[in-house]
Length: 214
Image (tube, rainbow, N blue to C red):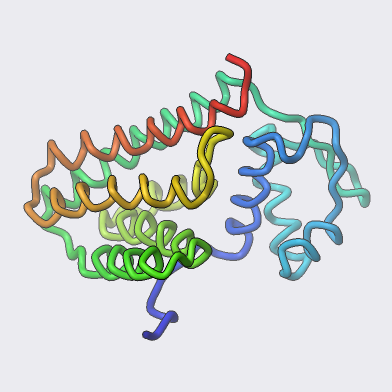
């Protein structure tokens, strides 16, 4: 298969996503220092998208920039996590509703879905993560609203694994939810698609919150 057909987020947003998830899961502790060189090497990308990712996260209040020294992790609390996922479900639920109502082309969404299925069959969870991202990205694209797509791209944080569930189990759960959603999208059932997307995002939030004492 030609992987070039699968759309993924730009490098700066990929970097922001990796860092955001590390902060959300407390892999990066509050008060820890991060540098452009360090993150660039860890992610295997150039410094420019990492610098842009730092700007994105600083705008979200997750890190504090230090001139010529990188940044300090400010951390996150339960309310900020709930706000993050609430914003996502509101936007993404409306996205799938619009996709159904406008009879938008979902061929790319289906393609990403099928490749995710194939990745899971061979237990390739790294590839599944890419196609999971692509599945959502193609939905945002199909809705034909650049502002919403930009907002959701800037909020992406990858698979929302919790302290009580590993990446493999999470991928299976996520794929089951995507399967239900894909069927609703094929039937152009706007209300069902909207409800399923909300449940998908909120379940992701609950997984993420297991990293916190609540």
